[in-house]
Figure (cartoon, rainbow, N blue to C red):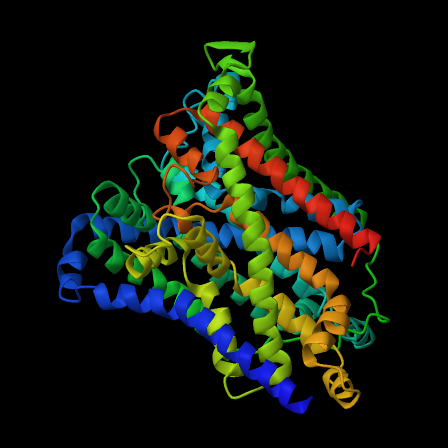
Length: 526
């Protein structure tokens, strides 16, 4: 039985090692080896490149600061005020994560464009195309991610410190500076890095609403898709990798500041009606804006020809149905289900190796797994072109599934890594002593004890695979095209009503999947 356990251990080591090499190391090396390093000098001198880089830095810095500020205030409202319906609000704040980033840009055009709903109502030119639109769209796209990180960070503050501060007579400013800021400074910095990377590498929002204001990811996209200049695309991709790599190194070398997390010492929120009213108004404003955005999709989908003919009509639904939208929707659902199942299995067993086997390759596997978080989707998709072009998986569902697994691998992996690390370390030892194989211990003991984590992993993989655009933009053909890429096509033809319908369908599918996951959790289905 001991030899059988060793055989299983080495088999899983080799299998996961090959998977990580083929899906991460090999594609990145393929891009780097194909880059003409002498061409970097000429690229850096290009006026269009310098302008695109400058534009990206400008909108990213502003968007990041505003996004993290809004997210912090929302996290504070949920964790440090007495506003009502906190659980529902926490869910509503994350709804923007259920549609592609390009949809946020299109939603803003629907509302504030030259023919937008609000523009026509108020007869005001909002100048939404360009800088203003990219900043607003980037905030909408990124603040839910920042909110989740910061809201979670509030839970790790040692709440007994606040009681000590009261006893010592510290005022509110001193309490914030010496307790709240002490515990929150690292999460805030991590959030700033994460949001900066997210916005800097996104091309969905600027592609939809940027107009002539071109950012670096859009520059890369147009060079590769429009001009088929893969060499220049590879060089730009390497540059896009820099902020993500810095963010990854920062998270790797710094340690999370956490309290004892003693749940018996729950933070007691003091009564403060003025504070609660202010934050209630703030939350309502944010939610109203989100409802307006999603409402614009529904409104445009059911009018004949906005703003010229606002009569109720199914004409746009008829058009997208004739253009095989349900085929592309089924493509996305199939791809997302496979990513959800296979990605969860790969991430779970990788986390099992790094958290419970603790072999000599565990640290390498751990670093590779979280390093995938630092690879922008547009760069990853381009690297798969270099690595797998002219192979049997190119332009098949296999490559779409593989690229999505890696694109979203890090977060589910960390979910499993943290969950498995908390389980009793003696399960395997007791099983081996009783003659039970390691595989049976994993299947019958460890996996049931981490069922909720597994379901969350599946949900994360599915939802993000449904909305992804950047990672698959270079890898599809018309037969396997995901439905999210229809938004790109319709946006390019200024068919905003059809784009709205696609966004609604993606949102509905993601909500239904999350509801199913919630039902499975609540019923305790094994």
